Amino acid sequence: MPSLPQAQPLNQWFPDLVAPCQSVYGPIRDYRAQLLPGEQAAVARAVPNRQHEFASGRLFARLAMGALGVRDQPVLAGAHREPLWPAEIVGAISHSKGEAWAAVARRDQGVQGVGIDLEHLGRLQPQLYERLFTAAECRHIEREGPALATSLFSAKEAVYKAVFPHGQRFIGFQEVELILDLGGGTDARPFRARYLGSHEPNRIMEAGLGHVRLCDPLVFTVFVLAG
View 1: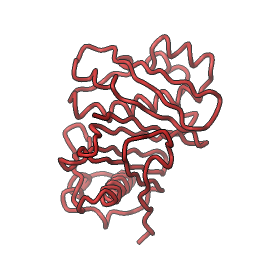
View 2: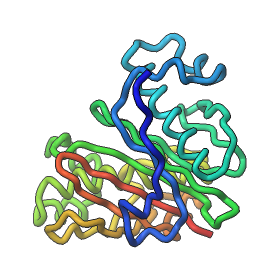
View 3: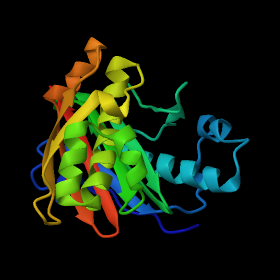
View 4: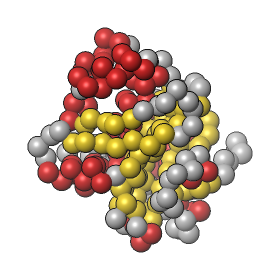
């Protein structure tokens, strides 16, 4: 069996992150033997690559929960393929081109939502910008360049994952406008989200705070709802 990656506090990656989150990051491997019974059923008919993705994400999530003192238990999938966490846990899982990442936090430590996203720089084509970003964001990308486009896309994915358990409704890319300035560096950068849609429960995103970190060729993003 491949060696297992270790959990670590998420603020080691994002020093300004106050929320007590644990995360596990590493390469996607064939961890299917580590799946628990309910997890196995969720991907029983999937192709092997998808099974490896799923198994890595679920194993990493359970390792991260273990670092928070939560007993080993399955992380099942909901109707929208979202992870179904134990009642005391909030968290998210992300995959990108052979890498997997999971992050979790405890509700009783003041965290009401966690979203993460992992992307490879340069994956977005400019012809997609108008569909994914608001006019203000497109102007910002024109000034700052394509790294910002990948960062904004990743940040919107992280926002969606943190907010969906509260709103239980799809959030379109044009419904979220982000305030993010990379500042020409690779250090973790904070961002805020503004909700432009009409589903009031989704407005909780405006109370959250996110962070983006560029580690070429990857973009790591976390968005946390504290309360």
